[in-house]
Image 1 (cartoon, rainbow, N blue to C red):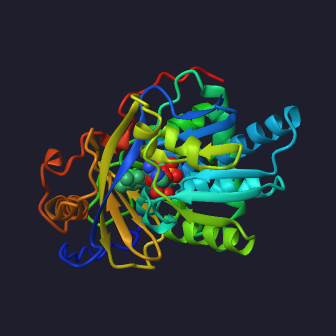
Image 2 (tube, rainbow, N blue to C red):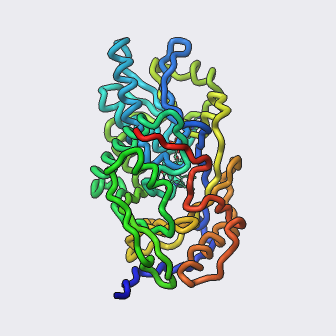
Image 3 (cartoon, rainbow, N blue to C red):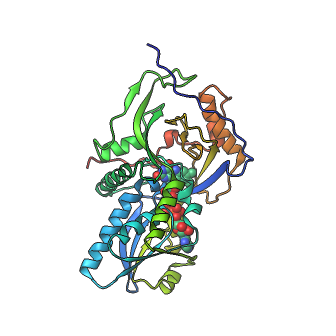
Length: 362
Ligand SMILES: Cc1cc2nc3c(=O)[nH]c(=O)nc-3n(C[C@H](O)[C@H](O)[C@H](O)COP(=O)(O)OP(=O)(O)OC[C@H]3O[C@@H](n4cnc5c(N)ncnc54)[C@H](O)[C@@H]3O)c2cc1C
């Protein structure tokens, strides 16, 4: 029996329209993301950065770990009633949310408000993508489980979280990581004889995933923090010593993303630029799609992305790349001529990690 097709996107795109073409820089860290604490000049500092292409995905799990580290510190050295959170991206906002629940007075310091951060530029799939975790498999398993549960609990609660099928041409490496770290967390993928789209004839896969719309998530987290009286201070830090001298709180949670490369002289940090083409929203598209690049139909835009430029640290979007991304996905639906993938910085099929870590069973 022939499989009926799901709706085909309208690939109309004008890269010259404001906001049609955007670029962000992933805060990638060689070896592993950083989630640990140190004491410097009498201040207790918790680091939470370096999550590459998975910061939205891991946020609530990492924030839970941050909260536990601070709670244990307070149990061992009681006294502090205030905490400073550096950074207003997804890592800072989720950490601030959970630290408030500990009964602490929370102040957020950042040089960009939430909707101007890298977090606001993320595509929004819940996927453990382009993040390293060497030697931290057990910790990441816990983070992944917590984060998934926290996002699932927020479906329908105004956080921009939806459950969607993701159709892929190849078995997604990102999904394999989750299957190995947290067996049973996500329903298993199914093989399909044919992907159910116009012009598609080859076999593929489908699995249930979460779509998280970053602008909605960040706005909701910020609004909830505002309601709770959490203060936002607009401030740019020049260095570690600047932070130590100018932040009065004795507990500091560092969620400065790529900023940590300079602030903490972290030579493991590496920028990885990514570009996105934003098509008009198309509510009939209730699926995610991936084949050397991805398409995430969100309520604000249909987002097409999947480019990787390791070592490139600028947020200037290239209109030709964005048009090429659209043409690439459109070509798979028979709606455009294909472009060489190298022209549009798609080097990693199915956006696999830059370095594929061997995952021991946990
Ligand atoms: C194109 C693209 C697509 C992506 N898609 C996904 C996806 O589908 N799913 C997913 O999970 N992740 C995705 N990501 C990755 C995700 O966006 C990042 O991992 C995440 O945003 C990191 O969050 P963060 O809070 O650590 O950093 P940021 O969002 O960058 O926030 C850092 C904060 O620190 C502040 N700061 C930094 N330096 C200083 C300083 N010197 N002084 C004061 N403040 C400072 C900034 O102002 C900002 O408020 C994508 C990224 C890109 C670029």
